[in-house]
Amino acid sequence: MVRGIAYLFISRDIGVVAHIADRIAVMYRGAIVEEGPVEAVLAPPYHPYTQALLSAVPLLGQRGRVGVRLRLLGDVSTPAPARGCRFAHRCPARLGPVCEEEAPPMRPAAPGHAIACHRPMEELARAPHALLAAG
Image (cartoon, rainbow, N blue to C red; front, side, top):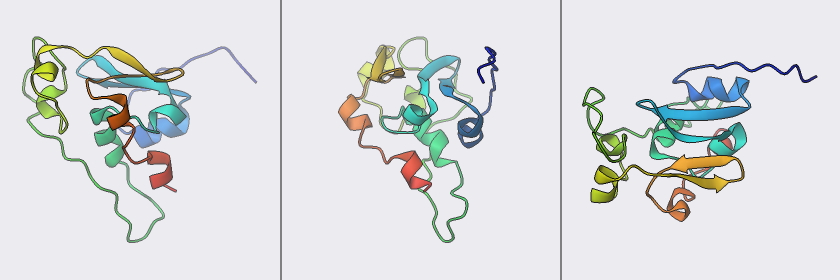
């Protein structure tokens, strides 16, 4: 039954968010870096920050199987840059000057799914599928 209500649930635990949400907006330092339906955000392409959040989700019920933990570069306390990508100083895949000087535009990754990253969508799409990694 559709009730016509919405809730805003804020958490760094993307695994919990995936269980209760229909849509996800991943934010880094106050800016949305990826957003869309849960199924789309948990499937490639991923913003590098979304990848880091997903890598922190424990793979429960899979004895002996440990997912690859993505360790972010830099210090979280470093001030946000005045220009460029807000995530560039911590991004393991930054492209250099373009990331440091130009804010990435939101680009469509799939219907209803957008991502803000300078990396080519084809490169982002090579990330392992989070839903399959957990199953």
